[in-house]
Length: 72
Image (cartoon, rainbow, N blue to C red; front, side, top):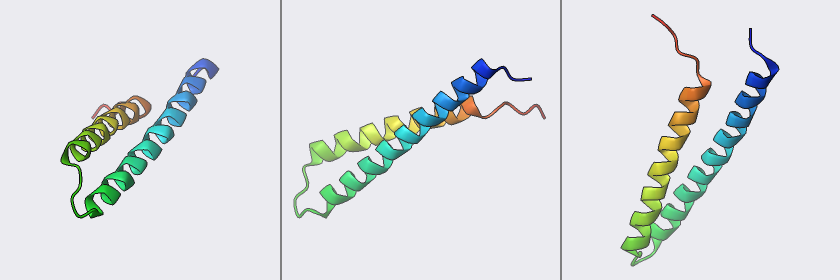
């Protein structure tokens, strides 16, 4: 049985997850736009890709926290 406190924590985690996913999509679009330039700034491109990867890791961690462990 879940307490209301635990449910609100999960709600907060879900909101954070959606925000991170939105940021990840925005970075994806920024990277795509930068790559369309004839001479993209490689340093900026690398930095954006690194941020995107970091967000992906944070998203995966939140998804793991929200998904209960299944004992096989």
